[in-house]
Image 1 (cartoon, rainbow, N blue to C red):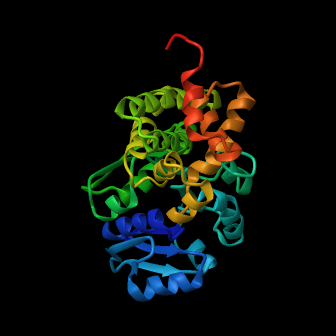
Image 2: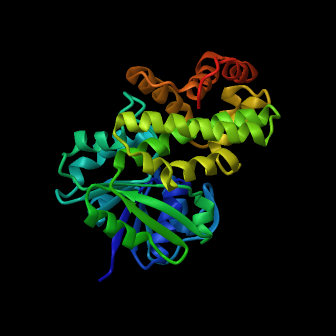
Length: 331
């Protein structure tokens, strides 16, 4: 039996996962919303803008036709940025078969209200729709290059989690399954905020001690918020929590970390975002995480100071000083 999967979102991550699935022998259809871009991908058999140097395997086809993508496979993997997640689901809804299963590799909150992404799916379709999230420490270029990677697929439907794992798992890409959808979602969203904070600290010239402290205390913030929202603590100690946090806070392939580095070195926010030239999920996530923390009475000082830098013009050095001046307390 030949397996099929449709991927929505032709950025670096969507393209990398499409290449991975095609190498596994799946028939893959990769959708992007810009017809001219998808025409280039079809002609060049490579995503030269977002993932240069990685040729498309033969089973990978591309399209700008959303209806074609909707009916291509019963399994849909959404890889668009979080700000486009809801609008993409609403656009595809009229074409989607009733038995469709929806997974996503998007990390973040809904920027129009702060909901977790599974809540958007339930609102757009139904509580009975089979859903799954794919998350963990994984840079697109390394996945496309076949470098060893391990991630988590979380779903309340064990059969769907296993099906998705079967499409993507191979000798270089290991998948662990989980039932903690909320924990995986929170870990994937909030780690981007903390990566900006870690980048700021490094941009200011602080050392490894500071970075380690930020990662450790940042993990505590993720755990406090995640448990309050319904996640499980063990999830935050795994690949979708600590693993992804370490990756994005310490490696310059992370766009969120690179933004923080630029801010720490004194570059204006708008210029730093323009220079990076791709979606930086931590910017919106900082606003939504702060909102959730305040709504639920959760102490998240690193998130708060990162928000102040991004949205209220607080100088990065002042943000660090505010953290250090906090009153003494037990760990």
